[in-house]
Amino acid sequence: MHRETKQRTAILKYLNNTKSHPTADIIYDVVKKIIPNISKGTIYRNLNVLKESGQVTRLNIKGTVSRYEIKQASHYHFRCEQCGRVFDIDEPVDKSIDERVAKSTGFKVIRHQLEFRGLCKDCQR
Amino acid sequence: MHRETKQRTAILKYLNNTKSHPTADIIYDVVKKIIPNISKGTIYRNLNVLKESGQVTRLNIKGTVSRYEIKQASHYHFRCEQCGRVFDIDEPVDKSIDERVAKSTGFKVIRHQLEFRGLCKDCQR
DNA sequence: TCAGTAATAGGAACCATTACCATTATTATG
DNA sequence: CATAATAATGGTAATGGTTCCTATTACTGA
Image (cartoon, rainbow over all chains, first blue to last red; front, top):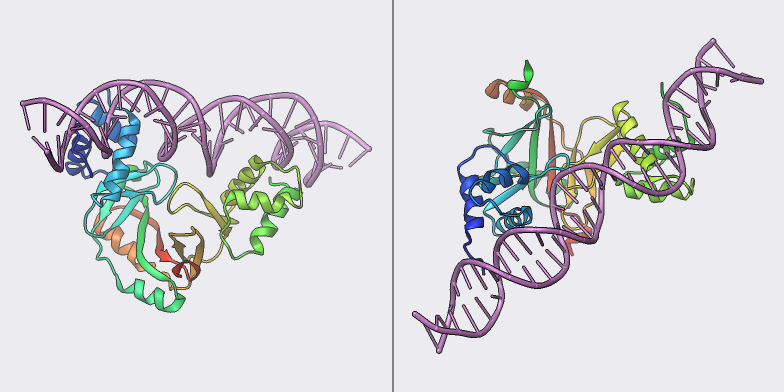
């Protein structure tokens, strides 16, 4: 069973209050201000626990560094290829294509992931 | 300018003749049979060179291990969450959503990437 | 043919993430 | 409340994919 530790609580609290999609490193830096001797392993361990329990989603759509967000209704993302930041997109999610692909391939399609790429406003200058 | 080496040729030849989306490790194992003392660094260096020159595409949609394929017309992928294999999907690519998202966000949208997830035929048993 | 230099092999370095382990802290239960 | 069982922690070592470094090799244009 899962216990409520101040480390886990602090991580969740931060994720609940940000719209950014922080990396483990960013989360570490932020939570370190509250719990100075927290270890990075604790960050990763908790992010994994929270992912398993469905409270957090990991976005590792491209490249090596994973980003995390509080679990929410299925939605799409935009990633800036310059600065790496990730933004939520409020385009309606089309679940019907999953069935269509399932039918045409014979695969069991559980979900799909759609990510737009380009330059965010800041990086267009 | 790019030179034609037997290492580069062997990598390209393999990619041209497979429909799988091999990892650098798999490519290494295969090409090693032809050029036994090839180094893994050469595999990665060439894959990057070929990516820069537009001959090869790197798929690093999820997780840490990249997969590669010969560049082809824009298309979508299915990734089996059990065995990790990647398959091409012949669903038509909808470029119009890029413009729609660009309009609603103010971002410059260059491309989008769509990946289906689930279980391939083999892993459904 | 040959000089200039891109590419190579091999191994070290890098870096995000995970594993390990002795210690600490949470929590169910009596 | 006391306590025992064990989940979680901090610190650090290990892992593994990928890149970097360097002396050497081998393409290629002239």
